[in-house]
Length: 246
Image 1 (cartoon, rainbow, N blue to C red):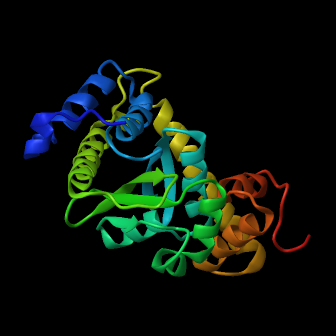
Image 2 (spheres, helix red, strand yellow):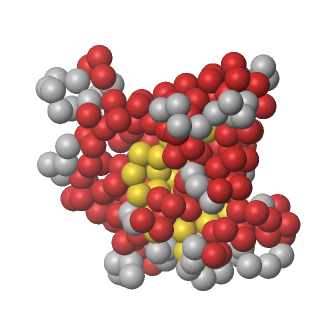
């Protein structure tokens, strides 16, 4: 699953992830980079999926994923407002959920654990993106069997998270884009992000509640229907759904 040789066994493995990342992102457009980096993570680590998200006001915004399963489990965390990626973003430290089928990880995130295992994920390793003072997002690694990352794998995951942070910080912002297509992924991301917050504002007006309560209502409605928070937000913004019963 992972390229390992005698040099990596001697503790020089961080060069290999760097080389693999450089090879994979060479020639990629801005919108392709997050997904490609997730693919590299799956190649280099004993995991079956990976995703990367930015975090803003407690709501993760997904940038890329290696598979539909990884994307779905990331959306579960966004909808619940709970899970390893939320904990990693809040603490700024790696969060390793080694076994979502039993033990302390199930007790810590009972609803997420149930939904993740139903989707075929039984371990999650969330690595914060940012620096010692600011966490801007998470790299989330998923596995279909319980287990831990050994020291070598954890070092590689940290290298991946560090390089993911550098890559994300280097991506052009909308005002800096050189060409008409360069900001496409960012504008799409902003649209998804804005829809959640626009829907939250509409729910606030309909119910006369604060931001936290409105977002909680949005997430609860999505959870009750087995949908994602983003899907429900789109219905609210399109006036297909109201929370005041009118």
